Image 1 (cartoon, rainbow, N blue to C red):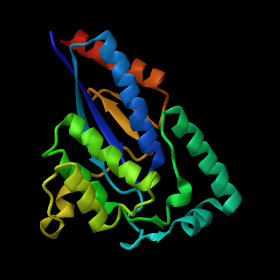
Image 2 (cartoon, rainbow, N blue to C red; image 1 turned 30 degrees about the horizontal axis):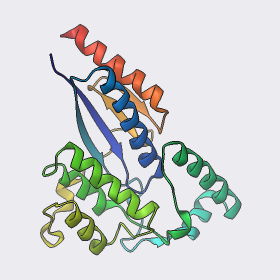
Image 3 (cartoon, helix red, strand yellow; image 1 turned 90 degrees about the vertical axis):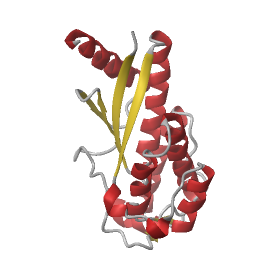
Image 4 (spheres, one colour; image 1 turned 180 degrees about the vertical axis):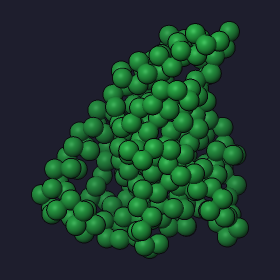
Length: 213
């Protein structure tokens, strides 16, 4: 008997912890599917900007974080923490390549829109391509031309001139931070937690659903 695992994933594309959290989630899901091959993943994306006050053209990346965290030393300490967590998840973050801290209103709306066209695996690839464009290549994901190119590569039919971003603003499901995951609309986990913890949450959510079936 097939069973679905619904995951509602709240994120902002500017947050490195969301990329790390996504990778940890995928690792956990692969482990779960090895145990339960019949399990189908139903991943719902809820992208929204954490900082809507950022100007449309963005802000200088280094200056933004120095003001936010209290200076260069604090910024480097935070980045070292991010890099370590990213490497544990199999990712490389290239902070030196990033020049602009963007407003992510448009890119978040684009992700929410994309899931109306792309299947589950294509969506994961598209979201990861956005993260990689920013955190590895240093591209400005607040720029429409950059997003057009990423959408085209993903075979996503998207015309920014006709796109109503307001229609695809989801509102983050959780005010306590991102990434935030809800499993089968029952069990919630916040943060880029380890795959083992996510695996336990998934197994528990599936077991509860079987009990209620």
